[in-house]
Length: 217
Image: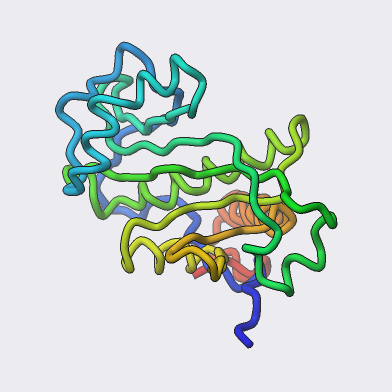
């Protein structure tokens, strides 16, 4: 049986840029708005492109889903994701996870419906930034509206492997449907906060690795 990934297994990169690295724009993540240029976004997947061009604003207006975008200038969309509520059938969840959940026929979850990065902005770690932002918002929301975890439908094998790197596990009844327990999300952000503090202490002391704090690779 495959071991459930633990937060400590997830390796995330932290730290400042080295001298000579390219200067990145000041990306921000915010809810989709009229100021954002949806028409020119292209991630190479027709379904995802079409969703942002034609459907995302309607989903927001009808409160079917909330799209968030990452942008370097408050206009250009470098990537996006959507969040909405979801009711997970407990039978979909692997036994080792289900035994830790409430014994109801369905449990509340958060659906990470879509996540995509523009081809223009590939290779800058924006996929991870979008995912971490989605998980953080899901965690914060779960303190007000109950959610046992985050569900995502990976579009292809590459996307499936991307999510599995961050601890998502397969829900066996639906192909490429994945789940991450909210307790795992909470523990993950606890470790991220620790690493941030360690990095800050390392840089303040004139070091670059923060080795004494267990800096991530």
